[in-house]
Picture: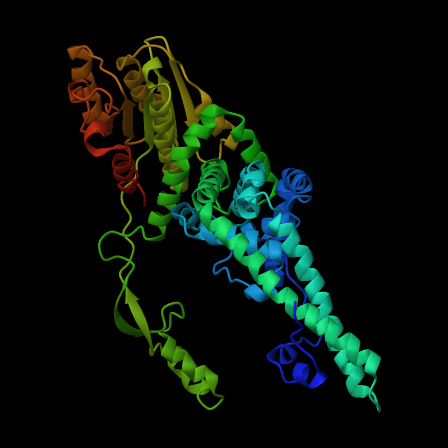
Length: 529
């Protein structure tokens, strides 16, 4: 190939010369920026998944040298409020052609948006999702590399050639500095400088060709790459969702989803029990919904800012009043207005509390409820228990099936443990269906166990006729003890059995008509103070 530069002057007057870096560029294997505090958060969170991530990275780094940085970037993309890319010209070839491409495709997915809604600012589910994503990617890594390399080992060649080119450019910079410091010309140095410059310029087109080949291959194989990423993202989404649901369902009342030892042990324990896992799918969402409702648990018009008034409630004072604190000259004015209750503040409507009785959930555990109905019914019952616990009300879960299959789990304020809740959740009779026995037990709880003006929620999927004389006696007891009965019929698979609940229930919800989500919302919203 003919040399581009035939003289030092031609070299020094070229754009190539003007673009020579002062020092060798430091190529980053990371694709996304991160702050120091985020790096510390990652370091702490990684402890919960260190074993699996170390195995993945050790098994892959001979084929993908940037695998550890990719793990870090995936976590950053899930956890960070606003993931920010590093400039592309600062990236190493593997980071630019593989990691950046994977992240680009990942962030376009609808599942990515769901993962963000779960993991943003929450290190534990973000790390769980990262480990799941990386495990799936590692299993298809050979396919991804083939999609980029097309059997020509392009990425490895590109990586080596770019490193060599960076060295040449740094050498050119050093030689040019030496040349400028000389008092007299050095023909040997000039000759070597021109040789290096011409070799470097000849490699530019080669590097451009390699970059283009990698891009073309990834574009040609886009369908497979997208499919691999979609599969990994779906698994990551399910993992993050399950992690959050488990902690919301069975964790502390704080609602914090941290990678503390208790939460890690809780997630491990629940994942070993299929019934608890299934319940958590529903219960986690219900508890999150309840938390949101409690933040705004006011009847119409309560809690919102609707006008101004005069006072000295610093939580309600409008922001412009605080501007007086910015200047020493106006601080006395603020203090005077505060002392005389003359600060402008928002007026808020006050919270109105509803009357609240104890709660009894009668839950059908006949064999026909096994599966989703059992999990949904337990989730609703345990969500009602959360309502009762928050308001320090008594709660009882009456497990029933056939006439001789009855068990009552009592949850009195301050007198039970999380293990007691899990024990109640995992109990399942699996027999037939009898309505009379659980209703007798509910009456006994009111008469003998101190349950006052009980709110009974009766959840079943089946048909059962109670004797007319018992229904009549139950009506008399209802007038005497002032309790209500709400029936929930899980009849989505066999609608039309409402008649089995109507004789003794004040209100009946049919899953076949409203769906489980709306019914759970109605049951809980009306009972949250």
